[in-house]
Length: 284
Image 1 (tube, rainbow, N blue to C red):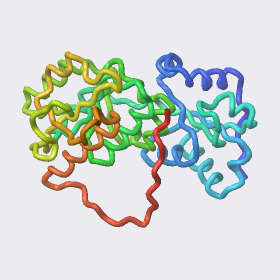
Image 2 (tube, rainbow, N blue to C red):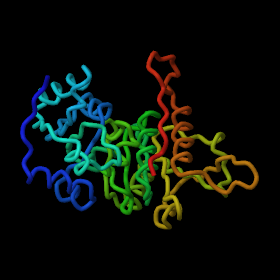
Image 3 (cartoon, rainbow, N blue to C red):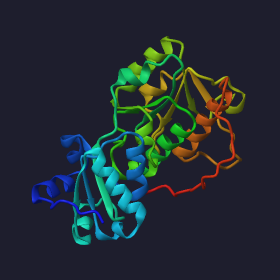
Image 4 (spheres, rainbow, N blue to C red):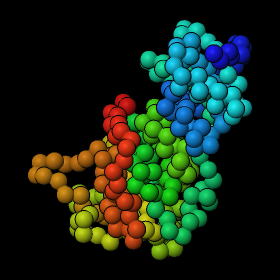
């Protein structure tokens, strides 16, 4: 059975601060919770600096193995009570293990450098569940990276990280991007900048949308900002039944991303898998 270190009051205060955007920005770190998410972080090469666990994690062989893996990664591991975990957790129902990792993000140049770009650009999305779902879908569709424009919820928001289900560890993303000049520069390189538009003349399923391409998605309430909309090179109409005005932003992003995937020379194969498919709801 694993035995953790004692947790200092100062370290607990620092972890609690990560529940807020200001705390995450000041420390450059965020919280991940639950066995599956911490496992995914380790598998992707993330190295949690600190981890908290409650005794219930020790009741399973999987939990003990995870603590051993955290120890091998160099994490400082602390056993805490359920009460302390509840105070540190960003969820209403803590899952018994919490880890602190560097906030997701890489330099902009790293995201826009590949020749065969397939990017998701997010302009002003405020719902962390929607953003997490978009990032998860982009990773699944084979996107090479993501650009998060200014005014978009931070990718380190614990709700975003949970909804992304590990995608923030796999998908290179740049945050606080000034999207208009970046997208304009990409367009001048011959990269298609596409967006869904109910009034678009070109139907989505009839458009040449293979990489290099950037799929741009706007905020839930107002859509794309005027400055971003001005640099879009293709406005694609997603077919909808009469009387339906719009789609959820994450759903629209999924349709666009997978149409790009379908149009690639070598799209992702659809293969049978022995792993269970787990569908999780969007986190509000």
